[in-house]
Length: 391
Image 1 (cartoon, rainbow, N blue to C red):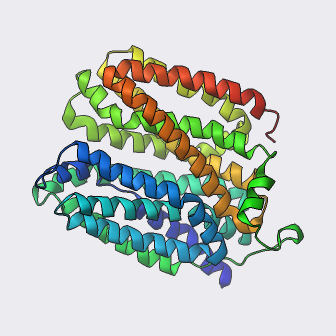
Image 2: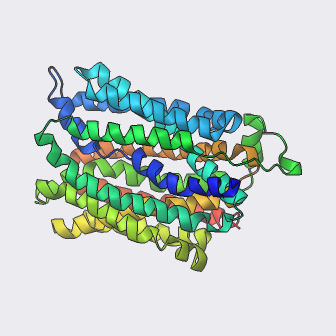
């Protein structure tokens, strides 16, 4: 009976994962600019406020999750998300958007790492840990397909009201909260060497020499540049002559790509493995960024952007599984370890955004070209040291 209840976490995670996605993001900035006395520059203000909140809370939230329980933090994450979207729905000025962004970023920080740790423990107790990457990738892929549909449909509901898409997302978040409350917490299995959670500073030391930091920096550089170019994808395509009305369709296609790749990521894990995959990723991400900068055909460039974004997000479960299998130095600090990785990635995202902000202002093509060159140089240098550490 207990195992059946625990098994329910798997299908519940699909609903939880779907309700975590922000299908209204493309509409949010448009809604903000309809408010009185608002400017495009202020979008950067509330975005920065959210980023700072996420940066400050990332590691502490993971550590708190490991100490008080993953389920409690997932419930807290959902509550913060509900208050976040309410702040946006009832917004009348910039301050509401700042509050909403801070709450949203805080929710994301608490959820980051915690979900993976919670589900990994679930699979361990079910004695199905070897299926973790396969099943979790498929669940995430299926959620991406539903998200693609919602991204296409929600903009049309703005004819009813500009905030109507947000209200739909609010309903989804309420459902997500009930799902989080219904999760069944797996029992903690404690090994002799992992009886008590390490103090945070000791965890940092114990991870040193395992390859964790090199791997985090490697993936952080990829994350940094891929996410840093993302805000410019739409305007770059528009400058090449891509129809504005089809930008949303392009975003949906990236989710469809995530769906197909997610269903085959376990095959890549089995045939190639994360260790060899990151070697190929040096050339994959570099080549795509360079080609995006060199071609002028908006539809070809759009296809490459779909592949870039879709693949990046689709292989995240595979990488998370690798971290849990190879860098978990303490069974009680899984969420903390994943949060440290996420923090390192966010640092490189900030660095990449800073560089590209100036280059993109001068030329989009130069920005993408620079991203490709920097990816190749930095990833190649790190991989030389990293390959000796990986199992």
